[in-house]
Length: 447
Image: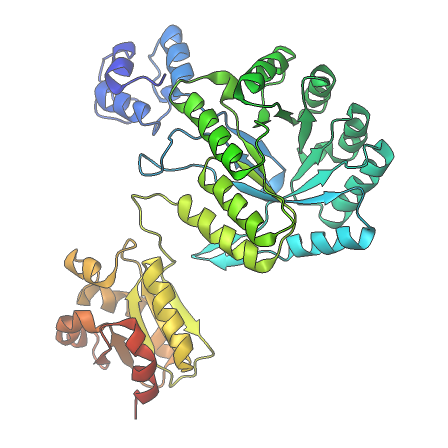
């Protein structure tokens, strides 16, 4: 069970030396309790206290990483049941399945879809994260051929190698061990052999059992073989089983600090019906899965799952924001309009969407207001005439414009006079109060 700030304070030296960068030991203890600092920052803490605090500070869901390089996927490290309590830490990875019983052209098509799955949304690059390679044939040579094909075509993608056959697992690991894959397929019948492979090749082991009780026994058994990093599968495949199993595992880890179930969870969402698969995958994303396995990478499905995942894994205490800069909507010319608003992501998407609907090529100036909407930012003193003027002048956008005219949101019409004073030579135009009026406004602009 995690220690409270007061309990942590009792284990600290209480010298208030400030060597940790905090004004008092109590302040440092509170940061430790919130997992916003490391005990290593205190040079005077005893080894016994460090051991106790280190164990207490470890997240209930064990952190681990699979894949290598820039595409490596972080999993686990979760500390809460509900995102409003703090935040979810590492976004659920989406993996698409290929099998060694598929034809080469089908495998190639799926890999092409995965490699082309990336989209940009709210300043983030979202994509399918991994390939789930399945040994459906149970033949080592066939599985080896599949893994070779995947590595050749998608060398940078993280891999999950799925087989219950230790011989097939070793054949695949000899090819892909340097990719730091997950080896999925350990169960009660092959636990020792699979654990030996995971330990030898230094990979994460995927462990499956029917139900949390059997799963906890199996993870302890495998841990006894020297394997620390695992991904667990409670065996649920229907929506009800996935929901029940995932919640039981997370509650056991968070509320009871039950270490045998404190590992990232893998969920299998594959269905013949793509809509049903999307719903099952959404359930996994929303309810604690660290990896969700899909059967395909259809673009509409990707967009739905990417948006859900991105929204769930933002910090609920920090509004979603876009980068401060001048965005081009269409292909603006020197005489095109310049519109300004705040960097709240919803504001950005609504305003840019309405500008696109107008079919009037424009420039959209997005100003950093810490993710606040227009009226909130104005009331907080972050969307004011001096700050807007400074942003516009520093952006250098005037050099690209034929006429210096800035369109401001109608809700802050009150700042137009002050803005004209701060921007000599500029014309300040008051735009509509609501974004849905932008198409008509822009079509009649400058007439």
